[in-house]
Image (cartoon, rainbow, N blue to C red; front, side, top):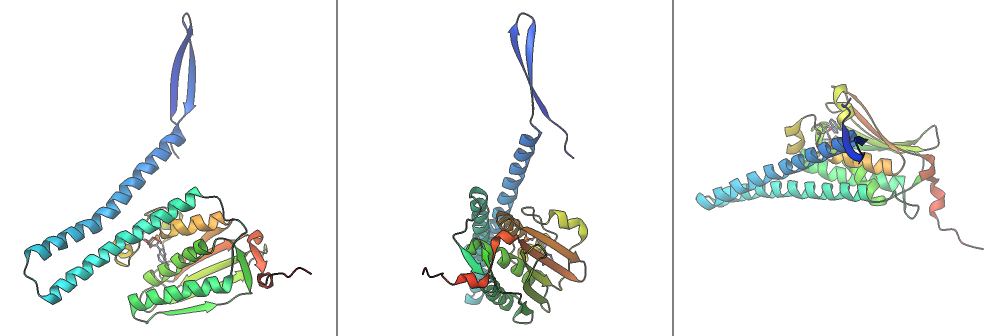
Length: 274
Ligand code: ADP
């Protein structure tokens, strides 16, 4: 895809002779372009809620408003401030994920607890956004322990579920479940009967700030970083994020975990030395 860029340096080393050093800087330039893009995106994401907030502050300062109108504007400002808070916490989480080694064996979580905790959060979000009209359910698989960072795993599954809640619509059905994989690993999946995602978007979905529908994502409180976080977390655990989607039918997001990260649930009980 990208044109090769070669840096050339010439060093005179004896009369009339020069040494030519060449270096392929394509990768460096690409990384630099990505960094610039990222900074531009973050700036834009911060500027839009700030613009809204400043506008409302001016309104509150200049107009005589009823208590009801004031409350309305304050609520909108609060919403925009929350948006910036979400953005900052997602950015911090991403940078922590990038800068730290893969989770060791010191922590584990029962998959049933992991799923039910994420589901409780998603149900709360669903109630706020859709007033209880969505259906969320669990399709439990075999009891297993996952060796990994609890908080990371929770935020990965939480992001998939909150996407399902946000995109599936008020009458949406969302299922979350897990099952053993043929290789002895585990997969945890989230399925919705929402709008689905066209195939041309799928390869780019986990890029930072990539959105199929900008306004829809923002309206529902999306930072544009959710799937980037999910992908990072699962890759750090040696697994993958797989996405299947059919426009008009819905989407399934799968988190796979390798056998090395899975234990039978019975090993949760501390072993007593004889
Ligand atoms: P966002 O904060 O925008 O939701 P994500 O990284 O979580 O960011 O998701 C990227 C994009 O993928 C979303 O903007 C949306 O267009 C699409 N998407 C994610 N999950 C779903 C889903 N369950 N159904 C339809 N589209 C989805």
